[in-house]
Image 1 (cartoon, rainbow, N blue to C red):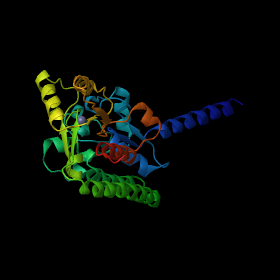
Image 2 (image 1 turned 60 degrees about the vertical axis):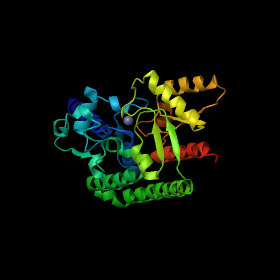
Image 3 (image 1 turned 180 degrees about the horizontal axis):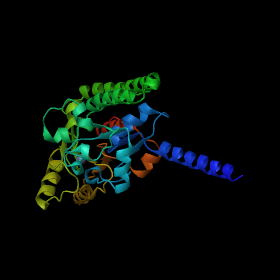
Image 4 (image 1 turned 45 degrees about the horizontal axis):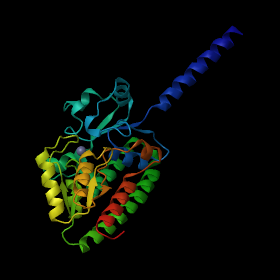
Length: 297
Ligand SMILES: [Zn+2]
């Protein structure tokens, strides 16, 4: 009886540790865009986790000690770049486990050497599509038994995104000299270069929360007035403080300025995360807002 009891405890202990192991994320991503790619390709076969909490600023991300051990136990660690993930101190080997493969997502994508564009490379749909394919290859290396499943998931998502991308490219090609005024930080260069439009960012800094001088705000107000601009784009996840100031100032002259979001894919809001919003969904939202701005809603 006693032996049976010990055996039962042993089995229970074994099961518990097996469960704990299965609860680990095989793939850990620092930022939304690579999380999205890995999650859609993995489907229900692998567990993928996103380190930057929904709603948080991806530029300020620092891992907790719990997240550091999650990275160590992972099989695939997808970080954005040393420029974005400054907490890595340019040495990813220090944080990964001996069985972890670490991928610098920016190095998967052929970059132009423009520091602003390189920092925010994921905002260019072309760059995202390259990363998507290479992440798929890494996932297949990790779990080749399910190769066909991953290929199918990749093909379906890639096709859907390419269709939307082509539609946007064709639409914008018809429009001449598209200029979008943007009150956020300068994180949309790869987006605007890909779609051959101008995104005039209010702030030339490539990080959020820059304090703008009264002079800078005045200049933008004048530019908006002189160009008869009626839409100002705002960035995601930030209270559009400056945009609202400009809106109020213009209202004094009876000018209505409408605010629309142009999402830079830094991170999802808690609600979007809960609703499984994808990179595709955000691109579609951006397209809808661009059409509204250009009078084609
Ligand atoms: Zn940014």
